Image 1 (tube, rainbow, N blue to C red):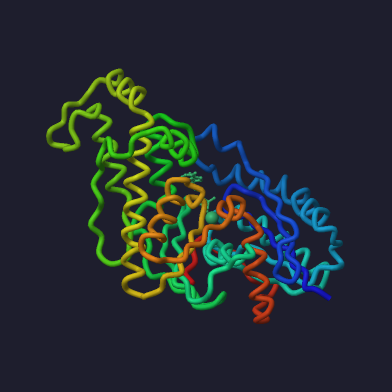
Image 2 (spheres, rainbow, N blue to C red):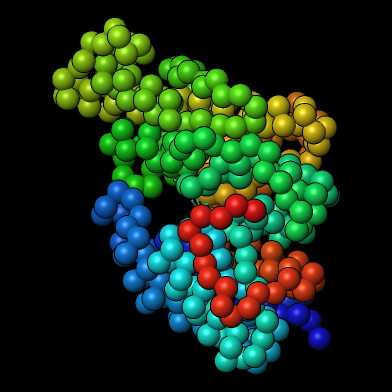
Length: 347
Ligand code: KG4
Ligand code: ZN
């Protein structure tokens, strides 16, 4: 009999459930929460409430799509950390209740580990060891993956995440939340060489994006007249908005390019340090077309083998929780019913 695992993801603003059978994803359901668009960011209290409303229909649909009854499940998995605590609690409580009612083992999954292991879902998988650049709204990490359950963070952001850099830059351009996908869309029509933004000097494999945001802020305040804060020209609001409107695509392309360069330089350093040339991408920002193309061409240039999961496995989803849970199932890595979720957690 194949091992069937139901996995639940509720760490932020997506309520998701997935069933995997013997390590193969057989259903993957996501309910996104549009309520946050009004507020320019995820509102934790609203996210928890939306999870409460969505979790039963989402889990039911995941089981129906998989054509599996709850009696046929062998284990229940949930995202334990990191994330918004109210959101995590909804998924954790639901998973625990199901595990108790069905008398099945419970598996706790780390959301960031799951983003990395999303690369093990497709038929074409990376061989171990591989490096993974995980870029999401909350994290930016270079992870060394020696086996499914042995991961080591080699570098991470010391301030904003790459997704935040996209979203905050988009906000400065007057674009709605989440701005990452919009920057991607406008950038496709723009000239990325038009404006140059500085690359931060951060030691080792760590990243920093907060300086880029400040540079963009001053640049826009000067309506493109000067990059340097001290030479401030201070345009009127109208001049600034006109500048943005008439240069939107070039601005998006240049900002996107700056973020991609920061990411790829550190990735090149990680390859140099470890000698590992099997490179994966993970997290919501890996949906970015500029980043995908840049990684593929860096791969061709440097002789790397590159892996990028399909879009549905890049952004938050429960299939990545299910595949991680499958490896934990093989290792008999179960948790007790008194396991609590945690907003922050190291691995
Ligand atoms: O992994 P994810 O879905 O959620 C977190 O765990 O954070 O990542 C969401 C982030 C957001 O910042 C969003 O703007 C960004 O991924 N994102 C993109 C694109 N699609 C999503 N950023 C740039 N280009 C995209 N196409
Ligand atoms: Zn995520």
